[in-house]
Image (cartoon, rainbow, N blue to C red):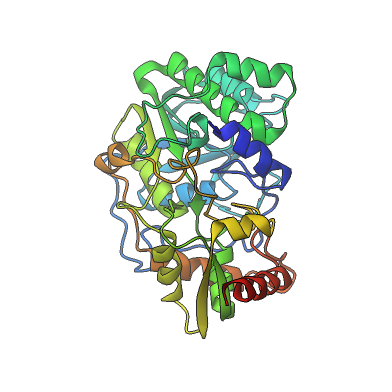
Length: 388
């Protein structure tokens, strides 16, 4: 069976990761701020007890969503990072400078916090070092892992108990100095074991799937709102029945903060939406937020393969259907929902992503994923010629 190691290796070759697997640079339009409760801007209620929260990272994609919501809840936040990515964010928040890659964690010495949110580690040794440094000075340690820690993409509806990469798998990729994409899942799984071993019932692991929304420079979902808003004939993959799972970055950030507020423990798959969503439902849902004159042409997967269209990279939020990928977009999220994970409407995510994209400025980079317009037109013409 194809596992996420093999799929991620192919993805990494194209410069695209899963979950937090991509390595985005500085975020264009990083000053984008949306009320953490969503576009409705309803007031965020204060937490019953104000916490002192340490964020390892905090200025990339998921980090700002966590920081914004934590501050709105009345918590005191400290950021620990290198100070390179979006240093202009959160000028009134305490910032400690260090580097987990060195490692240099001296700024954390002699301090205590109620909880730490670790969103920046994709390498297990970073988690080993930070948990060792913080085990006696924080009450709870939440590590943001990834669905990619699991090994089986072929079984639908798997829970948190599904198999993950083993310690032997981790040692293997380290010994071979495997590429980042191939080593990503084993590193996440190893980091999970470190957190649980160090903190016991004070440890938390959250495994997101594909995180989407404003500030996502990977464009893994952004391609669709942007392309649909451009109008015209849009090439859509397959027959529309393939499943799609995404989680808005702001919903995930809210969930992480609530977990530490609730003093939760254990492991949670953080995927969405609440009920199964097909590619057709996703694309037509995105269509609802734009007035562009647009139509969809669904092109069979076999034909896309003949045309050398890359899954996930050129057709975001989609992989070729088959026995090895039946569970790729079908993870059980009932445990996280029971613990408070909520999902805003798809229309809110699509609209806010499009607003963010359009507001980035003239110097912003082009889309990193999705079909190039000339290739899309060429494939559509070939598909029509074949189908008559």
